[in-house]
Image (tube, rainbow, N blue to C red):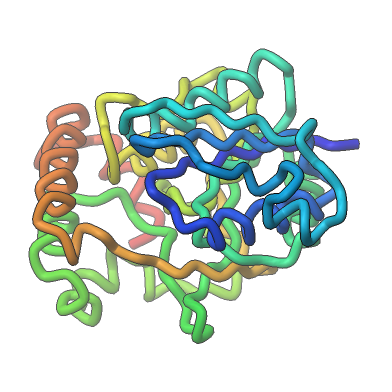
Amino acid sequence: MPLVNASIVLYRTPEDELTNILLTLLQSNVVRRIYVVDNSPEPLATLPWEKGGAVYAMTGDIPYKRIEYSHIGRNIGYGAAHNIAMRESIYDEVPYHLAINTDIRFEPEVLNRLVAQMELEPLIGMMQPRVTDPEGEMQYLCKMLPTPWDLMRRVVYGKRISRSKANSRFELKHLDHSRPINAPYLSGCFMLMRTAALEKVGLFDERFFMYPEDIDLTRRIHREYLTLYYPSETIIHAHRRASYHSLKMFWIHATNICRYFRKWGWWRDEERKAFNAPLQ
C-alpha cells in the first residue's frame, strides 16, 4: 500500500536531473503521488512523464496519474513551494511526506526500508539516511542547532571552514555516525516526515525564502518527535552550494539567516541550548 507523497521543487532544473529522480520515485512501491512544483519563469516545454518525454521513453508507460505538475510562474521560495504539496498530503491523510531535491540519487528500496522503520517507530517524526557525495565521501548533514557564528562563518568562508574544530563540532563529527543520531537539524535535501508531525507543528515557515527553512522545521518537529539520522541506509547528494558561487544567492542566504535568528534569538536561545546539550 503506498504510504508516501513526494514533492520536488524546480527552478530552471536540468531535465536529466528531474528525469532521474522521477524514475527513482516511480520505482518505489511506497510512493503514492509525486508533486512537481515549478518556480521557474517558464513552464517545462515537455513533461518527461507524458508521451514523448524521457520518463515515458524509459518506462514504456505513462505514469501521469502519479505525478502532478504545477507551474507557479515565479519563484515563491523552496519552503512555500513544498508546502503546496504538503498540504495535499495532510488533506488526503497520507501517512508520510518526502521533500526531496532533484540532485539526490538512491536505490528505490532505500525509501521502502526507511518508511518501514518509521512504521515500526511512531516516535520518529522525521528521518534522513546517511548522505554521501558522488565520490562516496560522507556529507555531515545532521547537525546541532546553529549559533549565528556557526552559520555566518559557513557563508563567509565556505569550504575553507570545513575542517575547523568549531565547524566539526557543529556537524557532530565527534559522534559515531555508524549509529542513529537524534539531531535537531537535518538537511532539506531529503526530509522524510510523518504527516501527523506536520499537522502538529506546522509546515515550512514561508518567511524564509531559502536556506534556513529546514533548520526551522526540523527543530519544531524535534520538540515533539525524534528527528533521526539513520545510517543503515545511504543516498547520494550532488550538492551544488549555489550561495558559494553567486553574489545574489549569497545575499539571499545571509538575509534569510538573519530572519531565522530574529525569529529564534541571536545569542540567547534557551531551546537551542537544551537541544544541543545531549550532543556535546
